[in-house]
Length: 342
Image (cartoon, rainbow, N blue to C red; front, side, top):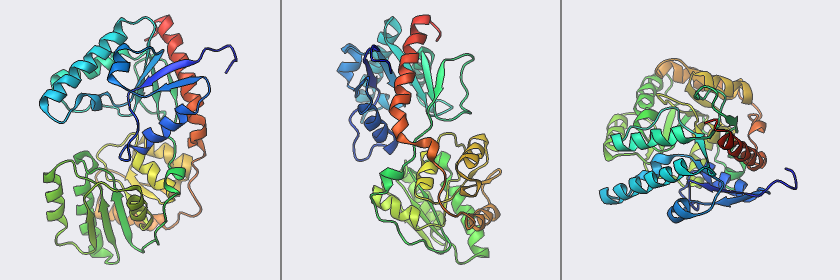
């Protein structure tokens, strides 16, 4: 950065990280705070509406629109709409959008309308991989999702258990944990040495009850249906020979990178993102299956995982580079704003 380049004030859409905050956000928060030439502003409603900043970076704007009850949610929707209105009226503030997901979440028509408005307002986009679809000629930068090696290295590694399969993260329908359980039921009949450990907080009591019913008669299944501490997550993942992510759709998966950061192979659906990731980190570390996960695909992935030696190559995902890369993106966003390139 040139000595004459002005210091930028950039507000994020996230506040002070909590112990339960996504580690990606916590590490990004630290990287931005330590970047020369950048004044890193955490989110506040007052600051977003009335404060002075050069750029505003959205991550998951839908998260800002949900409160603990209906009237708090309604108030949040109104506040987000006012922030969006401020950004649309300002000739100075650049709006930066980190594209974590390809599709907008299912929500009320009003929230979806507002999310689309925020999407259209983006002067600049940050993508985490090269396959993210973007509007034609949209100004953007690639900043890869950083690894979690430093984050999880503080916790003891478990002894690897022969035949152990694991999955972790919040239990959501799109993550298809029920499909994994059905595939495991088929696979364990052929290989009784297999075991399965499922960890993560379900999004509903119905999902939790369904998992309990599906696994009640299966051998060697452990359910840990609650939010996992980092120590519990490391214990779960490192005790496994293979981490299985049977998602219906996968684009930017922090769980894949978490497993690889703990030197555990993953089994994931075959798509362009995962094929490129396999080329990047080493093909033995990212096993893939086609279509819906089956018992045979689970067995094939487990057997192939035994070929993984050494550690996956995560050198393109160092956090030391993240702050400076974001600062360059913010400066480019301001240039795009001035040129009207949205």
